[in-house]
Amino acid sequence: MSVNEVTKAPPPPSLVILGATTLTSQTFAVGDEDHTLGNTLRHTLMNSLSDVEFAGYSVPHPSEAVLQMRIQHSPGSQQPVTESLKESCRTLASMCDHVKSIVMEKTPVPDNNGANEVIKIE
Image (cartoon, rainbow, N blue to C red; front, side, top):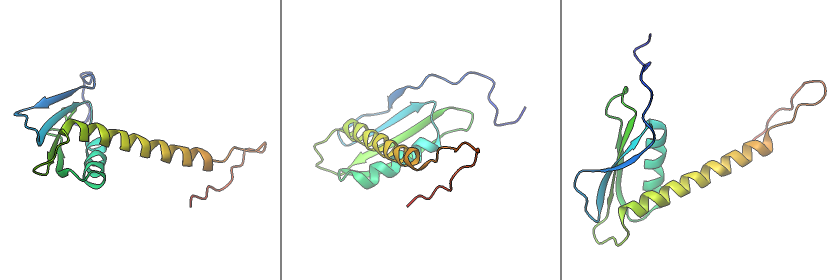
């Protein structure tokens, strides 16, 4: 068995608010997630929302299926941090839907001979 193989079942996905909560900053723990979601969510938070001053994440240990995400707003922001997280998740889902639609549109259908066309993505 490899060191990276975990023998116990992963926990169900969950979202928990960690530590002290203020209007401008919060830390969230997301169960059953890793760097894939952490990095894309951090990127979306920082690049698409003007209220977000800092967004960072960590995966405390590879054998623990949990992602910790810290979000901090600029002083004077009126939007709750939880709303920024929700908006970022909606933006990320929309981006994934867009990529999926392009791939589905550009994926060739095999002809009767079993040969595929070359996929050209612009």
